[in-house]
Image (tube, rainbow, N blue to C red; front, side, top):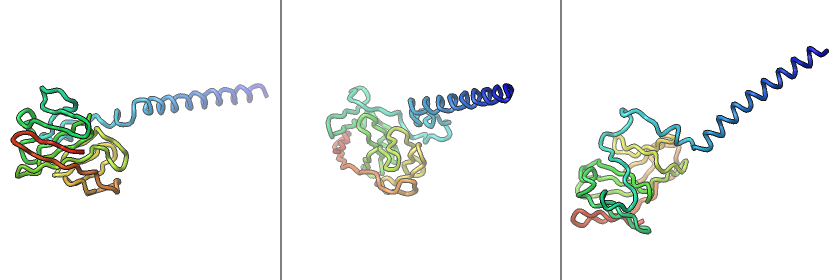
Length: 167
C-alpha cells in the first residue's frame, strides 16, 4: 500500500510540475503581451515601402503630435511622397498612406478586432493587422476579417509639403 501512495505522490508531483511550467509560460506571455511574440517577422513579410515608425514631436523626423492634430513635414518623410508610401505614427495611433494625386488617407491604427495598434503592414494596397490578419482598404473598410468594423478615418489637409491630420 505504501508503494501505491508513493506512486500517487510521484504522479501528483509530476502533475504539479507540468501545471507550474504551463502557467509560467502563460504568465510570461501575458506579461509581455502576444504582440511581443508576433511582432518578429522576416524581411519578406514587410512591404519595402514601409518607413520606420516615427511618432512623437521630434522636429528631426518631421512629425509633430499635439492633441488631436498630427503634422507631417513631407520633405523629412519622403517615403510618404510616393503613391503607396505609408507611415505608422505610434504616439498618435494613426496610419497614413499616400493614395496618389496629392491625396492621403489617415486611419486609426487601433484594429477593430483585437485593439492591436502597433503591428501593421501595407500589402497590395491594404493595411494588414499583424495580430490576427484583418485587412482594411485605404479608406478603412474591412476587406477581410476577423474584424467586422471599419477603422476610423481622419480628415487630412496638404499645404505645400505639410500634411495635417485632424483626429
